[in-house]
Length: 204
Image 1 (tube, rainbow, N blue to C red):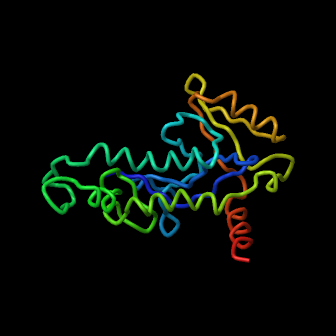
Image 2: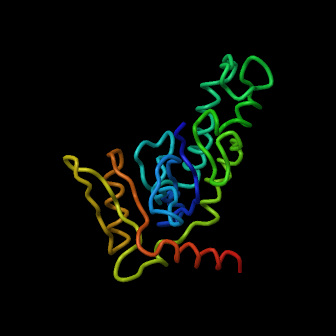
């Protein structure tokens, strides 16, 4: 069964109470590299927050509402529905709140890195996204080599287009202009160094 793996969350703060919810995700069936260097493919990209379509820049309140909605979708779909014979065995013949929260990963094909879908609970998924605030980077502090380490991606006639940003005002204006269109944001460049440097600052 194909499922989504959630690796890390590190939101990009682009203004006062303005965040791009950036997460590192991948598919369990896709690999890159060879031999001892083989690993599952994973990419840093913006999370499409439930209830807000393709909106790229959101407030903390909007993102939290989206996290709650992500979990509530599973509740609305499965609560009091009969369990199928191949489902993770619930506490009875019908799905309860407790069963759904405990087996959230199984029901939604989501796994936290290091876990299977059957070991991924709704609380783990919620905490994964909430950590994105604690681990958020101030994008203005990451300006280097004349640009920001964030880019906008979209398709035109089947061809991927990428926009890079040299001013914060240009970035925000472009993101707001594209609100509601099919697009996403990616980190690029020295993301691992950015993660490690930011992690060291958090530990201190």
